[in-house]
Length: 376
Image (cartoon, rainbow, N blue to C red; front, side, top):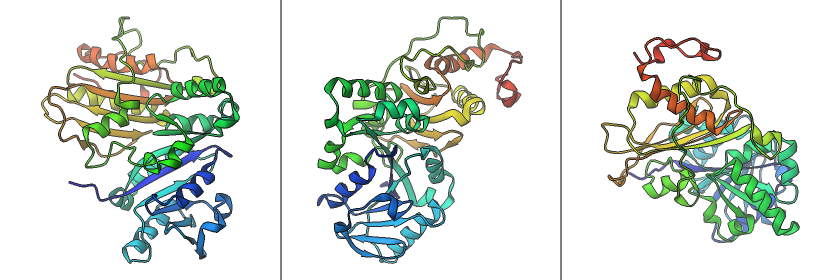
């Protein structure tokens, strides 16, 4: 069944990264589908006046047929009003693009689409595109943790001003961004301007998603990010798996606060084990979960499902129709702050090991997890 919800693309990037420049170029591109652009204030977005056909108090009609509106009360209400006016025939658009402020944390905006009753049924988050200034990106990532968070949560990273830096500097920034977010594609912004369709269809969570879409969403170039070996150390030495480990990053201290773990399991999971792992992770580290996503195969089911969450809010899972029945692997990617890959991988290993534990010991940090979450 086709997903008829309105796709929404979130455009993020630190101050001066070039979000407005990209929007102007996309709007002026003939092959761009009609979009509704939502900004905080018209004065901040810097839209090219040559592209503006008519102007109202809250809406600009662009000569390309696209529209631009500003947020007056709250985001959910602004989107609902746009959709209602589209339904009435006042506007025509096939997509919504939200340009955030440079300091915006993407997490609360993502949660809006999951918890708002109307938006959850009429829209879907189609992807997060983050612009990174190649000339100042390293310094910005060093100085601003918000910029690190924006890069870590993106589905697509676009490098702007690449012509202002050397090939060596660009390669260094590319490597750093890969370390922060190994599941995102990284392109030069010119590639996106030439082919605007590369900005769309980034999420694997739409109702009619295909196995190919889901795999591409999970990792760059539709290949596994990494397969981490089973932990050979005593699994009972750190029962939660979430005790703080020593940072190992060679970049800024901000980078050390971001960890990405990719877990690949060859055999289907027991549903109770998966539920308890996720419940434990959310209970102990929910506010620090920038993104959790995966393709999960549970014992006793024939079709895997795709899931996605931000902090403690998760979207309804989507069944993957047409999946290769020979492939029963579970793939999970977690991007979090103030955690490490080893901690995240130990957490899943802990859930396997503790099935034999009758009365687990009490330890710091476990007070937020109910005893009923432990297996009998």
